[in-house]
Image (cartoon, rainbow, N blue to C red):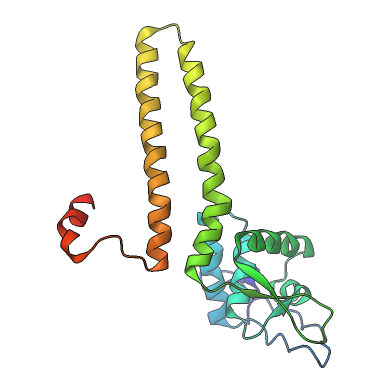
Length: 206
């Protein structure tokens, strides 16, 4: 068995046992056994994905353990399975819920909140786009406008010309990014952008 902090599947570290699960009331489902090798390896996949997009390691760990779990897990279950601080679990859940990657699951008779992962790629991507990509695109418009004002104050004509060229390129990149976002979302939704008669055009664009 492995702790997520000691994933020997990907790194040469020693195995670390995970503490026994806290007891549950009869009305609550058993959170399940300790992490197995395949669970630890799967969680590491989500940890690396979180790192790739600039999210804390704990975000990947929490989503990963929920993804592998057979039943909804409570806050304390996550703390004990992952062996991380309550603060890390709290912050990780907050981020995941903002992204729409985790949602609350009602357990009759239980006073504790339980969590389940969002398994729809469309909804996961939508949450990420809304909370991570869109704000950057919006703030980017204002930043480029500020850059343009600063360029106007450049005394050297040659450097000012170069700066304007670079600014034009940045705005072009920004425009293309804005155009890609709805396309990506539509692809994840299964929407076809091109008919069979437009195959040549699609290949040309690619």
